[in-house]
Amino acid sequence: MHFKVRAATKEDCKEISRMIKELAVYEKMPDQVKISHEELERDGFCQNPFFECLVAEVPEENTSKDGFTVVGFALYFYTYSTWKGPTVFLEDLYVMPEFRGNGFGKGLLCKVAKVGKEKQCVRLQLSVLDWNTPSRDFYAAKGAQDLTDSEGWHFIRFDGQNLDNLANEAPKD
Image 1 (cartoon, helix red, strand yellow):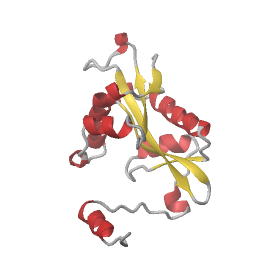
Image 2 (tube, rainbow, N blue to C red):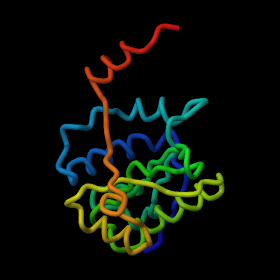
Image 3 (tube, rainbow, N blue to C red):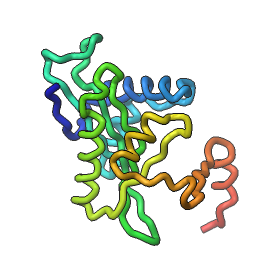
């Protein structure tokens, strides 16, 4: 099936928001999505964006059963490893179910890798839920290493009141 991967625009944010919600349902966490398309527009398409995004798009004659032409996305940002250097972090990669198995995910993943390499990134990192075997197998087939077992890394998060408490304990300027 013919498709193209392109940089997302501000006008794509409603479609990206729709697919973020679809991904959250797949990941069994639909109640966790609190972000709106307006926030995506603000945070991704400002002078100093917090993220970049690619979309997979099909021609009009291949729209989804619900009439969508934007059928996948990859949202990523840059971070820095004090051991290795610039890193691209893939926050989300999603392809609508009816388009899976046609190279869309691979196209998005490879394009993120290419963009990262063009920006001198030395690695691409991401996280996958432990039960998501199809995704884990997909990334492993492309050469990804699962650091959970080999290096023992755990992802740690502060949010909500715990983040507020931590920030409030910061030394005064």
